[in-house]
Image 1 (tube, rainbow, N blue to C red):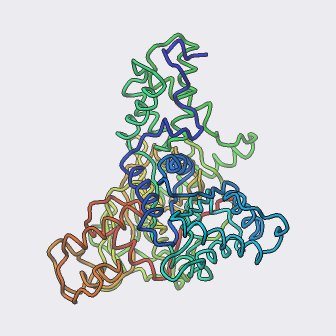
Image 2 (cartoon, rainbow, N blue to C red):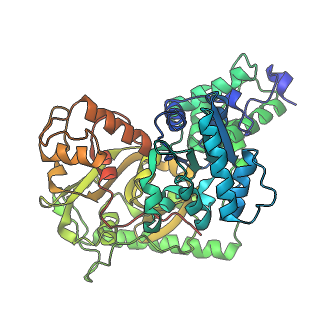
Length: 536
């Protein structure tokens, strides 16, 4: 319809995973390199795990991978993992063109014939790869069967390389104690995060050129708005851009501005469920009550924080054991409700810090904070503070509750991040817990965060290049870097490369510096609160 109007020979923003339209941002190039590494020499017959939020390009990367396979590779591609163990084995055999007549329904018979096929392939110098998309949907018995397939081997080499692609829930699944044997066999991990503002513009222009377009129709503010409304998720970018082109064609507009983008986004993004007038009235009354309580709260001396003051206890009761918040149904807050809540709460971080300390089962005096939110440990121990600016994907990859500073006009408030799924986030502001669309959060979040983590006291001062001592030794040990390197060896280029690899895998800035976020990712063993991953 609009193709000839804009001089295109095909739709530029289709959501089908066409490798021709792939724009390899830096993180996509790194992810593809991890996948190719897993198929080539580096995988060693273990698992390669690629995770990312819905729409970040995992399936597209898998299609691009298939185009770049070595000539000696044979691939079994499983697109529907919702199968039991026997059905999965049958699917793998069928993908590898193995005749399984008379062997269906028998796990032993299927494994035996698959093993025989793999041995023949090995004798011919072929590599066999099993790629499972949406692997977070694998039933437990099927996942265990996949693990057992790595036992198919010769004296010197595994016969099957397995690539698992899935949403962040896949990481949670393989982290279960009963699946620790599988987790130990994962030789490479990578978490794919959304595009930043610059990459969004490059992504849109690339797809436009591939589709035959000449003059790019979106002005700078329109591109900025698309990034804000999509959160940098490529699939949402495609949907919004497609609808904006249709709107531009209908209005005979050769230049698409931010207003048209907003109109398009409002049409295609999932709106909050419409409610009858009486729940709305109740919500309005509740917000008014929150505003009144907030004003009363600000008038009380206890929560008033001066720089260096200890966080006041949220309750006189002993802190509850740290745990992941329970899945409960909560209200979904729209833009208007969020604006009211931010304005009514005020910018003190005290309530959010109080709740976070309770989740960690830490006493009130564990940290001190200043009015802007940053914190410092009250004593030299295993409690550390982390604060600064980050991308949402990086914080979600850490899988710990964090404080986020939200801004709406001149008003700001600190929210506590409690959970996340593919579309929504669970937040707490003051005494209110609610779910919020990710795109809406991205439009209100400044990028500022704060939080805490637990690790050895020596990590209070992060190690730097050239440093030596216990902190560097701990870092090297956690990364399993350097083999038999003696204690006291300095933070060198080799260790930095290991740090960079970890950062790539966890969706963190890959600068090779073992900063607080990197140390937090490495010190992930202590029990404590995790992000809720199922939001009802």
